[in-house]
Image (cartoon, rainbow, N blue to C red; front, side):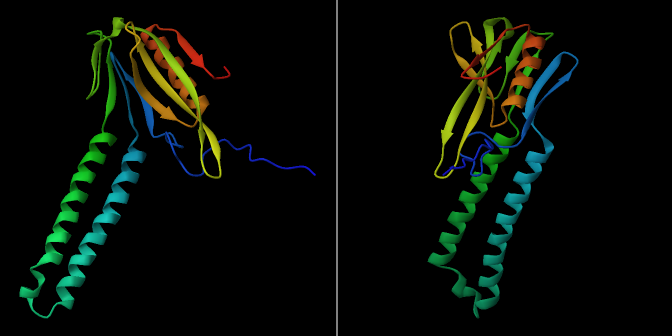
Length: 188
């Protein structure tokens, strides 16, 4: 009896990294950026818009089903506003994450993002790491692209399940920054 295994390494349930190309390396003169695509930002916006409609629906239903407006004030309204404030805070956090970018200013010789700032000559290489992700019903590979500094600090740039895409972006970045790429647990 032959047992078939699922050889498709694309994740069904995403556990780590995205299973689509949510960010891209763009080069414009002396500035290179790894940033989220407009498509990924649009998907996030549509998701948050749908969630916000839910909050408005709850408020609308409470308003039309309550005979006296004075009855709306109380514990239920406080709980509603707490959840609304939490939703707004989460939305702002997600948009901040969606607008993150990794910037390489070649003319000034610096790398910067919202978390890090370093000189480009402080980097000694680019690293692509394949990690095996184990899920309930599926396993897949996630590929991480990192900048490696002279102090062996790694700065994560991209994390995707599409290994060929990550390797291509690593090669472009290596050419741009004149660095070597090392592949860990990857077939080149």
